[in-house]
Length: 375
Length: 67
Image 1 (spheres, each protein chain N blue to C red):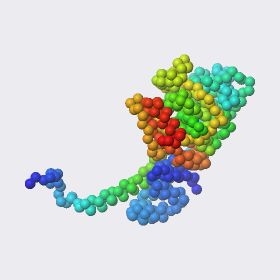
Image 2: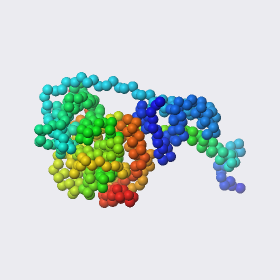
Image 3: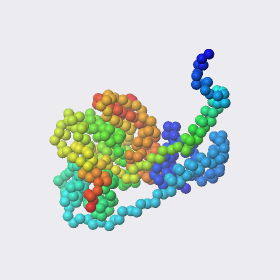
Image 4: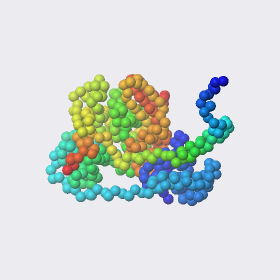
């Protein structure tokens, strides 16, 4: 029996397949047909019932059932053949060029880098957590190149190796390992990691989402200056119990946003600036204030934000289907049935908003009203 | 007398249908629209692993850094 889940969302259904870890949005009647196919009912029987229901010919109904089976059920129930795993043969360089120590949730992490390119991938966003205390190192990461791949080893155990095209996955895995270590939860205990910013107010969180360049991080910094607590920027972990956890990396502030934030954060003026020429990006990192590693709180709403100089302020409830279409491809969602079920249940109850603004005051007010159930 | 609908003059009786027939036809197309909808779906794939937004001196895909 193939493992799948299904859930109604607005006027459609969502079906999740374990084998492909895919979420499929389809008509409710199509979802019913998929169920019947997966329950191993014969195509003839399914088609016969469908023909009667829709007052169409059995031939037409058979075609529909076959088409759904061929294009949807079969491709999503055949386990993708695993790509050949990257060889674990590697040579750790004998010399370490850079050593950094970070204090995160009372644990000291040592990270060894073989060159400055590797350093640039991880250090800038954790620089504010650097510590000179090196006596009780709890975990050691080693980052090095071998066989044209960047490697990550944690406490002597091979974690992974990535080609240059997947360097953002190397960075993501490092972040994930930090999360696993500081909260003592392995990967299977996390529902997902979301490409968002998270703010907290009175023990509840709002996730701020949107495409790159829409102003997620700037909005987060602005809200933090208004007394909301920064929980995470760019990497928002949520566990099986649907609680959002803090991730302590610096808030990435793009050059064009620095002037907007100088009034609230005067130290940004002299903060280290990183020129990522190949990414055409210049950023400074703003350390989050009052990171509370004990705080885990539920999510109250998803807000898809966009800073637009031509629009003073607009907010509206967003179609959940539209929000789902944006959220899923931009997130890591655990592929275990338990976590996928948790994700669907979590998303179903999550109000989604679209907020476009250039008027900061109105944005603060709207976010506060969402937190206080006044919107 | 000038026709109120000059175009109508160019339409032969062969192709004119009554309102009742038109509704029946629309209904039929409505059924086909519904049947098409059954076969229309969107497949969404979550990321295969955790990822950060790109940052650092290496852009995803740039060659030569991992040699």
